[in-house]
Image 1: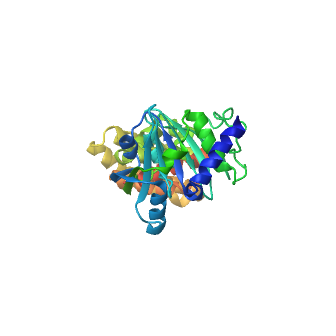
Image 2: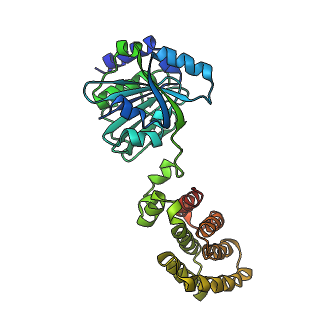
Image 3: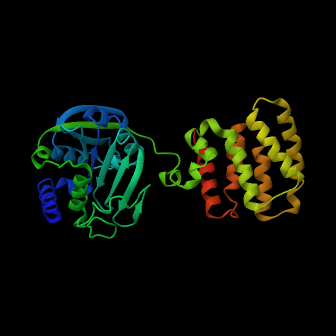
Length: 338
């Protein structure tokens, strides 16, 4: 069975050889061509009829900074198919979340670093790269369906393309039609791509990102500047074991500033606390001195300055272990998000 499936997709790739070089193919559940196209970019032009070969030749002649081209087909059972002859937008997390929002999306990318990814209801289930490994909420969910298909990490690169397409058929139940792929399909031009997530998906999937306070700042970084400053101060104190009445008072004042942002007396108290904290620095060194500077920065009355400076300083603290490093990465990235 696996041999027949592999032979079918080997024949498909021989016939449509332009796919082997650097294409990206994506099965999209519960979608139409127009609805799928909208998830590829902010500004689109199309549809217009074009074959895969024509689209690939146009992309080859346009250069790497030209607008992306995506060709779309539609099946009777509610599935749509996207093909980028020379692109990889369809496997980006930012795109896959939208494509899979109402169901399932399965993408295969060819080229020097072949990979495939399965998303369901906007969540990355598994993502496998031929060279480097696998990730996701359930990285081994497809193990049974991958049996007999050489597309696990470390499989030979020359057999990966047909094996990954065969896996796509097993996962979705939809076979790619050799003749349909040779005809005119709906071509869209992506004038503006979706922006890159400010926080990489690997961090969003980390257990730290599920903690309520961190989930809140990830959901709205620009609206959570004061919370970011408060979390930075707490993290600096936790990482370094810094203590004392001045530190306790500073943390209490920060909590007040976050819960009552317009309280003028809290801002006045903060100014006095900052002055007191500065007197501690000469007696400290290394990470503990940095932690005091984080507290001073977090007490700044300007939310943007407080979050930016507190995370810039806290980023340099190395006493918190791996989870601490993840927290600082999230805090710093969110503080810099416009």
